[in-house]
Structures are given as structure tokens and as C-alpha cells.
Image (tube, rainbow, N blue to C red; front, side, top):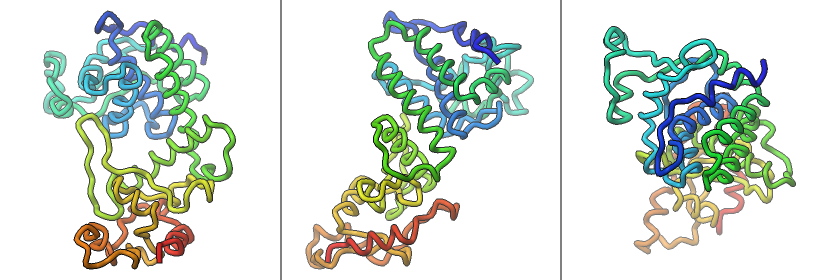
Length: 314
């Protein structure tokens, strides 16, 4: 396999926006490359799911500085008009009830409208194979950026995002490697990105204390990935050393006001006055069950939970 395979990536039919080549299709392909490299997409049949869409929004924002204008339904629909190595670059898997009229359908007006037509598409098999190879994935990303964003003032931010995303993919595929001291800044950034992705996905983007789950229309998440034993002390970015928490509860745990215990219940610091109304939002957590990931392999480490209990303010 050579870089000849990637030539079709420079032949996308793209429009122009504000005097520059439109970012929609290039960003969708970059998102697919990232998700193949982190192991989320492992066949040419690509699911149009939350992870892919969030990645697309991230890349569009990195490329343009404008997250609100991303409109993923546009490239997801129009990419089917581009050629891959040996045929269509992107073939939607239309619902059987509309497959016979698919070619006559007009462009959907929203992501919801698009998902009513298809939720999967098949990527050109030669490109899929190329994107599975780490070096080819890097080459493909560099080629797309150089061709479609050559004069873009955001090019540096886009390259930085891609370098971090592709390196974090190695960690996501091998989460046991997310432990040990790191000296290089780029490695720490990649590890942090992998930690965040693995923790939030393990908890299905739901808070481990309140069960709150919210994803904005432009795919920002309410919850954050919180270390149980702080990284500065543990050098441990494995998802078993993390929880998904809303920002206020992340702050409360880091300030030792609350702790998830080895009994899988929440505990509140006794220094908090029961009779102070302002403390009620924390007091109500006491004794509540910790929301755990469904997969046991991602459930919090007992020693990490014990560390939190030992450091609760007394």
C-alpha cells in the first residue's frame, strides 16, 4: 500500500465558504481517520454515532474556530458524490423502506432528518485499510490539511489537534499503558485526551453521582473525567482511576468535600454543617450509590476509592 491510495482525498468536491474551501467534507474524513486509529471504527461500515459526531465537531472547530456552523448532515450526505480508490468513497446504507428511491431523495435539512434515512455508511475499502495503518493515517491527515487548509489561519490549531488525537488513539487501544511518569508534554496531552475519552464513554457521559447526562446539539458534554488519585501523585491515567462527574462535583471531590468509597457509596465530609442550606447539594449525596460503568473492566479501582476516603476532610 502506497500514498497513491490517498490521491482520491485531494479530489473531493467542496464549495467555498468566506473565501476558503469549505471544511465540512475534509473534517468528516479527518474524524473518520481519528476514530479508526483509536479503534472505535473497525470495519468499513461506519456508524454515525455520538463519538464520530463529537469528533467531527471538534475538528471543525479546530479548523475554523466556529463550532456552531459545523452542520454534520451536509458532509454525511454529500460525501456520497465523491470517488474513492475503486468506486464510491462513501455509500450510505439506506433503510430498506427507502432504498429504491434513495437516488432521488433531496438533501436532508438536519442531522435528525439524515438519521431517518441512514445511520451507517460504507467507506471505500482501500481507504479504510489505509487509515488502519498508523503511518498512512498520519500521511492522509497531513495531505488533507495541506490540500484544503493550506492558507487557513487555523492550520496550526488543526495540526495540533490531529497530532494529539492520533497519538491518543494508541493509548485508547492500549489503556494499560496509561500509567507511569511522562516527561514529554505532547505525550501527557495525548494521555489526558485518552483518559477523558475512555472515562466518559465508560460512564456513557453520565455523572457517577447525580446520574445527570446531557449532550448539547454541538456535542459538548456536561460531565468531566475526574481522577480518583490525582495524576500528580499517581501518574495513573487508566480509566479505573477515574469517574465521570459534573464540574461542580469534580471540584467538590478534588477539594475533599465528598468521596466515593470502596463500598460504592458517596460519603460527605463531616466538616459540612448539616443545618446550612448552602450545603444541601452535597449533603444529599451521602449514602447514595456510585453510578458504575456497565463493563466491570472500567469500574473504579478499590485502592483508588480507598485513597479518596482516606483523604476526605475530617
